[in-house]
Length: 187
Ligand SMILES: [Zn+2]
Image (tube, rainbow, N blue to C red; front, side, top):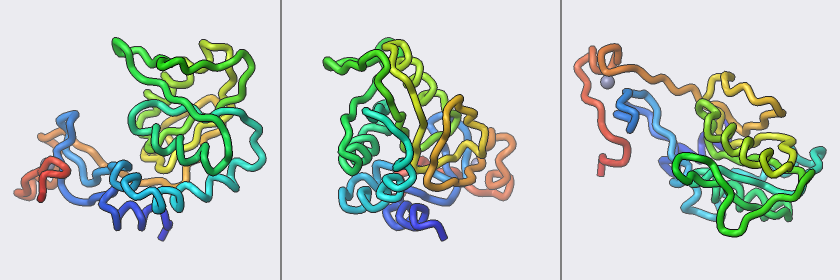
């Protein structure tokens, strides 16, 4: 099995079951990278294979969409000895704040822990490009888009996870008499 997946399972960053997501959908899988990132040594180990994967790509800065990408981007930049900053939502617009700046022509890698639809990643890319910087690749720990993320630059995930979601009416686990739980509410 992929080592990333086994670490996510061990730290409960990946749970299998019957979950009620904040979107209202039911799912058979729940992903929470922050459960892995709680352990700096473990997150360093998870991210380490990206160092080799990025060896051929020239870039200056790692940019992450807040909040999920921040600790991932920080550890990746630490291992690659690069600068790292993050974008965050202000009035729903992905923005660079806190004095973070990008120079025209600066080469950027976008780091997002889990890519689902790729929406926040694309918004982060747009904020970077608005500064005149150049996005050269998107990296993620987990791709759960089923290959549907469709970025205009190379996409480098460490692992893929198949996540199924249903509306309440269509959920097969509900039909079988099960009750969905909110992730993290088991204890
Ligand atoms: Zn259900």
